[in-house]
Amino acid sequence: MGLSEQYFWESTPKKIIALIDQKKEVEKIQQKNLAIYTACYVWGKDPDKYEDNGGPVAGRDIPISDGALKGLML
Image (cartoon, rainbow, N blue to C red; front, side, top):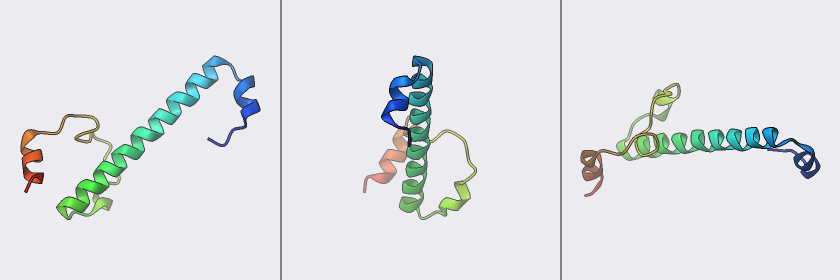
């Protein structure tokens, strides 16, 4: 996150917990982006179409349906 070690040790626990939560949120967004990109690549769709879509992503936010998994197995 670009902060020094000294800042870390001088911070209150509340700040550290906020930084951890912020990092988890960034990782969740990155995983969603990767899931959408991979799904678009597999199914030949345009990833830019899903840029503003803030809905749940299958496999990350909701379970993947059995039908979708069977479609991937050739």
